[in-house]
Image 1 (cartoon, helix red, strand yellow):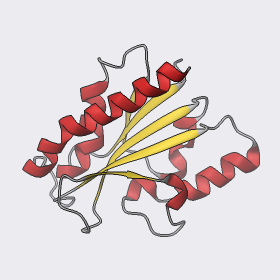
Image 2 (image 1 turned 120 degrees about the horizontal axis):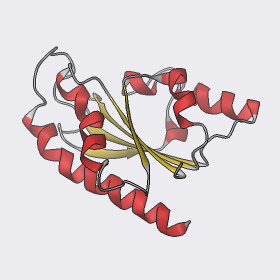
Image 3 (image 1 turned 120 degrees about the vertical axis):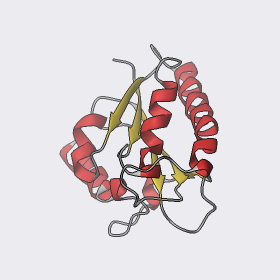
Image 4 (image 1 turned 180 degrees about the vertical axis):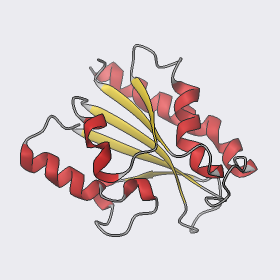
Amino acid sequence: MPPILILGLGNDIISDDAAGLLVARMVREELAGVADVVESSLSGLALLELLLGYERVIIVDAEGTGQRPPGSITEIDPAALDALIAPSPHYAGLPEMFAIAEQLGLDFPKEIRILAIEAENLSEIGGPVSEAVRVALPEAAARVTEMARGWASQD
């Protein structure tokens, strides 16, 4: 297994929540042999098993902070996530998961980056991805590819 995981999070039946999944699909072929690419609708502690055994992980997801224009791409420091409040339901429990992995001495990634795409619509079931998010997807995919290739060149 490659030492790098690209984890696209989301739900492809809820409009912009599909952003992370769509980015994962965009980079899968290009990063074959460089990184494992996984799509998941899991969140919080349920993600633990997916992360074990990898040295580095890039998580891609939609977020709904309302603080940035839809389609904005932000890198979030996992250490800065509040244990109780998260900008995406997929991040809920991540700080606790990091602590549990450390306390149990699990083979947890030494580096995790979270790339978040600000959503316009996280409530419409069956709705399409908004134009703002759709336009941001290629840039997000390029950033994921650049991060993964940068890590791979260090190994």
